[in-house]
Image 1 (spheres, rainbow, N blue to C red):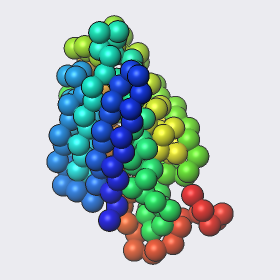
Image 2: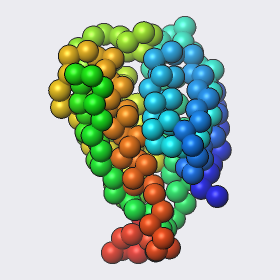
Image 3: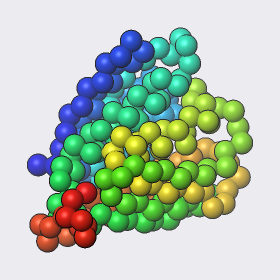
Image 4: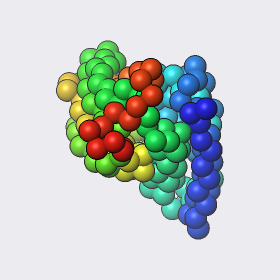
Length: 193
């Protein structure tokens, strides 16, 4: 079973994540931030994972702690569900359009955290989610999952479309990278990931 359940409780948030890498795209996401729910739902759907993400956060402060902690917890669940990362493709890349927007994501489930995220968002907020938090969410997921993410919006005019196409591209890249290759070996010259 390539699945994990992770709970994160701090003085700022209480997050619960259940993740199954071999799902059908079923998402049950309730973070208290509508647009964040929308992005995570798109990620889960197009990665073909199954996931539950719930959060009770200090939204009376702002959206930062909730968005960051949900991303960290989801990243931890991804890391745990991958286990030794034995028998996976490891690398994945994808392009995803959304109308006039086009995004590219390249993923290495390397065991070494790194993120390069260029979304070129211009608005201050999308719904109740600060646009500055969107790349931070992707970076937090990469760090917590011990993965390398390169996510770039290549073109687009509408910030909703730019952000959503970026998450869809990442979803498709993760679907490719987490796919089983049938080898049963750890895909690294080091022998560990």
